[in-house]
Length: 281
Figure 1 (cartoon, rainbow, N blue to C red):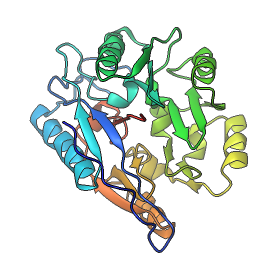
Figure 2 (figure 1 turned 45 degrees about the vertical axis):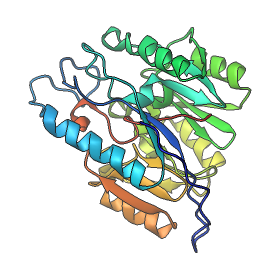
Figure 3 (figure 1 turned 135 degrees about the vertical axis):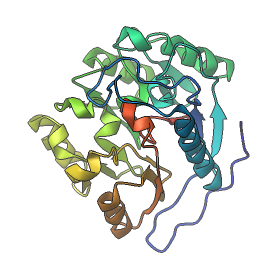
Figure 4 (figure 1 turned 90 degrees about the vertical axis):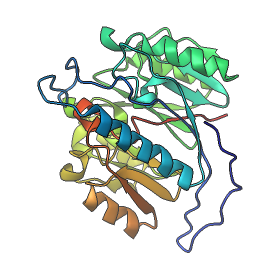
């Protein structure tokens, strides 16, 4: 589904400006927790598939209500984690860099997403090295912050640097609960991020301090409900409704938090951002 994007909005009194975005999402038609490839997943824990679908659709409608475009890739049988569209690739300037998943259970998602992106008219480039798309590759202005430690290989960072001609900053994750960069760091606008310091190695914490001295430092209790797995349009920040402390910090900094409940999808280790791939065309 595609909607027409509205013009850029004027800055609010804090100077925060929302910019219409274009997102790709995948409905959780086959969502289940059938294996455990991160600490959040427990196949013995019941999953309510109907509730997951309602929560996903509420997230989709939230984006539409904020004036963004949402396109939907069909879910494929046998791929219960395909709902986590952010992992499906990285799209910058009309070029789509494909995902190459670390675990065999998700391997078929890479070609599925790349096929859709090519069919949508984007230039599709197949990755040579293991990476999990926007799960570990986050665009901040002209930079790409690139996570490693659990899923994405450092060699993929070099691929991204060569493909997009942008500076790529490697950040090492050290806590398996924050196995993707987008679970430990949220991009809020072109110069502002929020992150959980203890999710990163000492060297990467120093890098983040140097790059983003005014970053919001998240509390462990907010990160533990995947509050940092958030989607921002520069003013509105869509995040887990349970991350109330982080929401308060966002308000203090002039952002508008928009809480959503994706607790059923969290049983597989994903939140709002995991469900959302930005199409930068």
